[in-house]
Image (cartoon, rainbow, N blue to C red):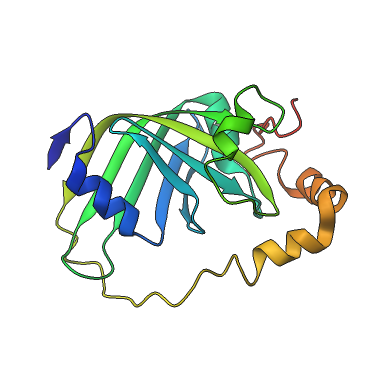
Length: 182
């Protein structure tokens, strides 16, 4: 059910309770990408704007897609309590550590090894559906704190840069991600 072009207090509170969300992007051609995200990485800046901190992973599809098309969808599912699926549709841009505005934006998030980019999304529409097909699931803890972040801490910045050069400079469809300013 379309709700309009912005969040309200109820929807903001719902988002803030979620332990994870999903991001979807697509270039004009090639694969659509959808990825789960977590680790205290989302901030609501206003009823029409969110940012999320992107940590290193085996790919960098979102950044490559945004260089081709600025469309982004975020989806939140209730795994506890009342059933609800919330989607935010909008346009997004990528902010790298080398960019103006990085210092201010990154200060909103905890410092985490493997931090790669921040995505800044302008919400254009908000949609809700029942979510009754989503199973109940119990949250235990974030994997990133025990698996991913220590891995990148041990690599250090030089090792992380080498990892990014091997796995994160192009999408699986060959689009450049702009990670090193290329």
